[in-house]
Image 1 (tube, rainbow, N blue to C red):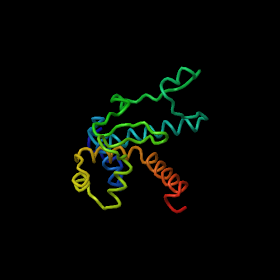
Image 2 (image 1 turned 90 degrees about the vertical axis):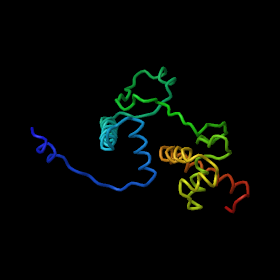
Image 3 (image 1 turned 180 degrees about the vertical axis):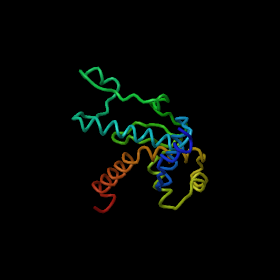
Length: 175
């Protein structure tokens, strides 16, 4: 089949994404060593199709810690070539800290969570460069925090709601 005929069988899609998602896509492309963003979307859709097919066939798709697998009698593990990179992402500028309920990462050397940084940037309408300057944090740390936020947005937003609830309950904010 000629290249022209192959190309004519393809369908071009176009859609808009937020800057956070665009940054996530660019970082994934680099981290996974993909040639194009198209490869990332194809792999993502394949993953989604696998999950959908499992659910459609009556299976449950769950997430377990590796040490919990021993207690399971049977399970099916997702295997994909994109997972050749480190399973647990390591960060240069973000660290975990013990906290009774907070799970999101902190900016290394600061008493500031990723959520606090992102919300401060939004509140003060700061660009990445402005935030790096204002908070005296390397620009690479800002970019890493934005990538982490894009990956963990739901967690960070839930923790922000919990923090607000706690402040209202303890009388620091009006209920």
